[in-house]
Image 1 (tube, rainbow, N blue to C red):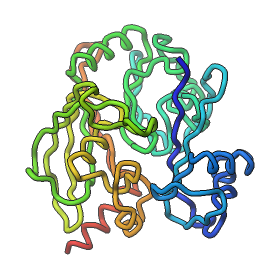
Image 2 (image 1 turned 90 degrees about the vertical axis):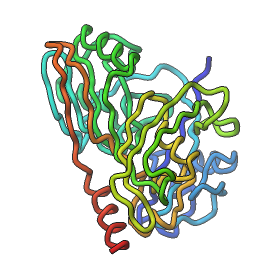
Image 3 (image 1 turned 60 degrees about the vertical axis):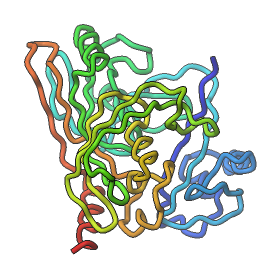
Length: 313
């Protein structure tokens, strides 16, 4: 089976204001302008959700999406320091990290940016060898555009026991999400299967052919234009929170891939989806005791929250 293409979604820096799409992409992604032009001509480039050609101009703060074809050959781990990645907990069995935005959990076709396991390797950590070569030790993932807590197994025992807990749904995964509007009801459960989007390979969607997916949410604070939610995942599908909230007509603020209003994100100076993994709890594979970790909001999310709160004052 051939690898699926990967979509990169990035904010356009203010310094590229007025540049052509092909020139901006070449500078942002580090490849040739010719390749950028070819992708645009093939309909693989979108600006704020709309398909664009190579000669259109970009604006600072807008979002550019490019569907990258998978490269030939195997995916390998590159040991590379990850700026801003915090080690929350470290012992003989596992390491808990606070993943910054813009970092993938592990290498994948088309992704040339930093990864959690690459950052751990650069820092001298030895992790479990269980799992595929490019994702050894990874028992769960966060989207590149989502920040927060991840646990990585260091021992084979930890890998096996943590994977079993994720399969048994006994891990407590909590997220905070700032979503557009006000969900009705303000607290509830979204139980809807998720599968590949029927038209777009880079997206996921609620579809009858999808896998069972359950998301529980509770209102933390309501604002004029948005609501801050505490979200607990019962299942762990790709993009689950983003897909469920979008299908519920309340996408995460800043999530242009799943229908968020770009004007609200721009007003809040937010360049990614407002979604953060704030708490992670599980039975420690070493001593069998419950272990729980918490993460504060990153600066960009806190600033956006302060702005939406000020608008409602």
